[in-house]
Amino acid sequence: MNRTQDLSKLIRLTGDRAKLDAKANGTYIVYKTEAGQFVKEYSNGEIVKMNEQDLPQ
Image (cartoon, rainbow, N blue to C red):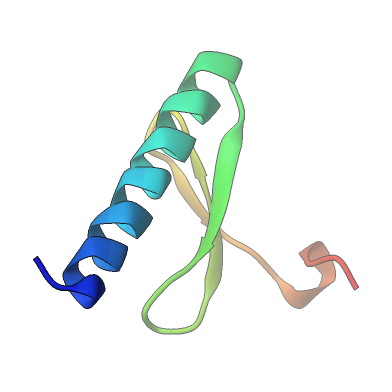
């Protein structure tokens, strides 16, 4: 694999680990979609779009 593929795999695995940790702790993860929208994804699969007021300043 090249560096770009290695980095892509590492990023994906990090996201997967964050989802597992959120499920184990009953919390959620926050990420930015391809469309540029920040969302919260809960361990039950529910996805909630975040407003600008929800983001820390």
